[in-house]
Amino acid sequence: MPTDRLRETWARDEPVFNAWLVLDGAAAASVVAAAGFDTVTLDLQHGASSLEEAAHVVAGVEPHATPLARPRWNDPGEIMRLLDVGARGIVCPMVGSPAEAERLVAACRYPPAGARSYGPVRGAFGAGADHVRLGEAETLVFAMIETAEGLKNVDDIAATPGVDGLYVGPADLSLALGLSSFADFEDAALLEALDAVVHAGRRHGIVPGVHAPSPERSARMVERGFRFVSPAVDADLLGSSGTAALAATRSLLEQD
Image (cartoon, rainbow, N blue to C red; front, side, top):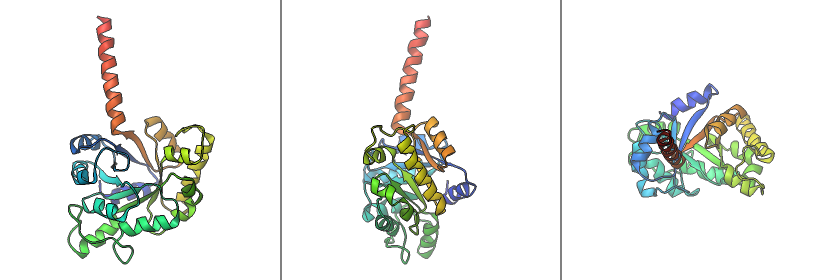
């Protein structure tokens, strides 16, 4: 799915559903993408894939869904490389201030809007000026809100020119806020923080997103106002399906 179709979905105030990849390998990524998700995000920060594998994973995703990537950090070189090998957007971790948001945007945008160096490998939208023009329109930039500083500055981060959306990492945000719970979507303090992100996104006309890896949690987050949600992680899908298949087999044998 091209990112213009994602933008059209958001313009209708409808949710985009994302799968999260922590396992390595293009084959598994392709299977997950083919399930029907709108986007699939390759996690280089905490996942098993390396930067060197990113091009293969992105290629496996692209026939089925829009490939996005989370770099290990707000590193311009790594961000530019991920875009050059075909990622259509960046979900950047630990953005805590407007200055950090500006650094992220600069790595994703060509001059004069940013500082991205020209040199697409397989992520080209054409050649020369055509690629630059279409690349600017297509590339998505999400700043992750997962620190106390980021939450405090969420309105200014959302107002940063070139940022397309915010994306909450509830685990790190729970730790940063000193909550006794951990990524608990029933915790009143976490829900208050999540609402603050939604309101900031709405105020500035950008997309509020959240990592909510279960169908139930993601559905509740959509109802709460989030429009970019991740109901599934590849490792969880593999584990839960394996557990269910084994339990069903044993249950059938017990009936005989």
